[in-house]
Image (cartoon, rainbow, N blue to C red; front, top):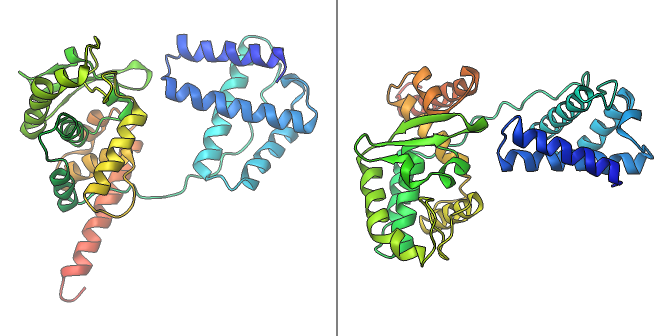
Length: 299
C-alpha cells in the first residue's frame, strides 16, 4: 500500500470517527474492506482509486464470490466501498463512484437462531456459583437476556448508567444513539450481587467505571464477553457454540411470543427501521407452526 492510499484510508477513518461517530468495531470492518480493495488494485496493476471503473468494480465483486464469502459479507463490502467513494467524491479526490451501480446480492432469508425457554434455564443453572467470576457471569448473562443489548453495548455500560430505583440501564447504541431499557427482578438481583460482592474483588486496584470487569481487573471487552458466553454454553452441555446475537434474538422472540407489540420490541432493540425487527415475526410464526405440527392430532 503506497503512502497516498494510506493517507486516504486514514482520512476516511477520521471521518467515520468524528463525523459519523461510528463504533470502533464498525470502523475496523470498513478499514478491512478497503484494504481488501487495495490488495485487489495491486493484483490488477491499478495504481490509484481514480482509475477504477465500473468494470473493475464488477471484477472485484467476482473475486469476492470466488472466495466463497456469504451474501451478507459481499453486500457489506460493497456498501463500505460505496461509502468510501462517496467520501472521496465529496472531498473532490475522485470524479465518479464505480461502486454506485454494482448490484448487491439479495439477502439470504435466514431466520435468527434463538434459545427456547428450557435452554435458557439450563444455561442459568450453569451460571450458578459463589466465586467472583461465576457471580459476574450470572449478572452478565441475566443482563444480556433481560435487555437484548448488543455485546458492544453491554461492554460499554458504566456504573452511572444503571438505575436500580427504576430498574433501567442507559445504553449507547449505533451512532451513539441512547436508549433506556428496563430489566426485571432476576437481572436486578444478579447485578446487585455482582456489584456488591464480586466487582470490588475483581477490580484489584484498578480504577474505572465499566460495570463488567475481566479477571485482571480491567474493563471486559466484547471479545471477552463472547469467550465467557461460549464457556457458559459448554458448561450447560448444549450443542454448538453460542453466538452473542442469539441472546438478542432470544430476547426479541420471547417478547413477541408472549404478546409484546412490534413497535415496543423495535424501540428496545434500538432498531432504526421496523423492517429490521419484523424478521422476528417470522421466527414466532415458524415456532407456532412447529408446535402445531408436533402436538395437533391431525396435523
